[in-house]
Length: 304
Image (tube, rainbow, N blue to C red; front, side, top):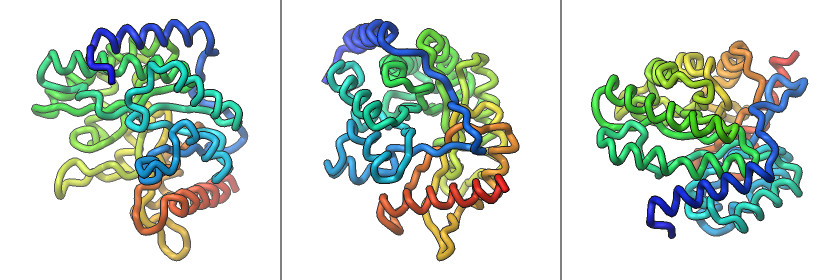
């Protein structure tokens, strides 16, 4: 484990120098004739990975083999101490390439709060994300997903988070990597608040990852998910198709996918929708298959 902050930053810069020379620039969307494309969020398999049944390096080929998907979204906590490990990262990249799978983004958690009231802690949180920007570029990702959390009033946290996002976006621009925020609890689950924070970040590399299901602000306070996604779509560089439970007809019982996907498409978005099954009513494998089938069915309906 790397414990010295300067060592982390030095390692991140070293990785960056290596990958800039070896990797081609990332692009946000690979366009196709479909209304949208499908990818798999690694969190969908978090139980399997944590149980040691799936190596994170095999996530991409697993997504291709088991679900026929050619794009994936990684989660940093599954390889938290590995982003500056050249051998590990090269192996992960090669396995994805050999399977014909594209790495889209890295979801970053447990790296500190970008809206932290303590300026020292906030600075460390910003710096902790630098290595993930470098790792994202190395893998060919277009973005890292971060969180906009902190203590204080909505206005105070928004101001600090916007400043942190701007600083990260400046770094991201050097690597051709976007820095995107998911509605992920607290103030960030208020669509208007997060949209306002992204505008305040005031950088073309700062954007959003709208999630269909993460609109719980606090105990007993839920933001309207359709309104929230609509507010976040103008800044979207990705979309997370969250699912929990399904009825007998294969419809998600918490989100009207037809209504939600029309919001996404009407916003002019035609990139990837990441399948993120988070329920426990069926197995992870079955939940992923049900979500994929639902997305494909609604896509066909809307295309018609």
